[in-house]
Image (cartoon, rainbow, N blue to C red):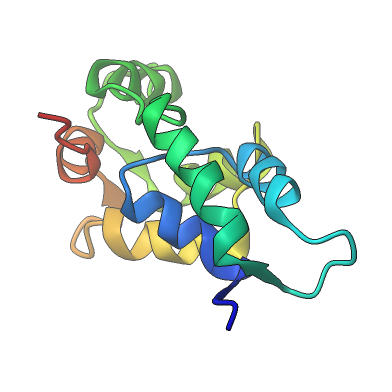
Length: 133
């Protein structure tokens, strides 16, 4: 009997293994393991060797803490150390590779301080960085 994985779960599986692909990279990986006629499912037997290679090659490594900090600082030219919820939503949905509504809600629930209605990005970065040691 063939084991299958819903393609919608692939991102969760890959991220749980410490990989951080962009949405574009994730779509490319899914296309690589998907059947000729997409069914919404991926055969485990097809996924396992591809994912093993990804892990061996250390692809999709997390972005280092100092680079994340610099990225937030670019969005905060006044060097306040925080962004308002509105600023964060604007940057994450209108710039670069835009977040989906679901991704935005997930980030806001983890990042926004309810008292100040802002993200203190140094604290957020510390919370979200993966320790690779």
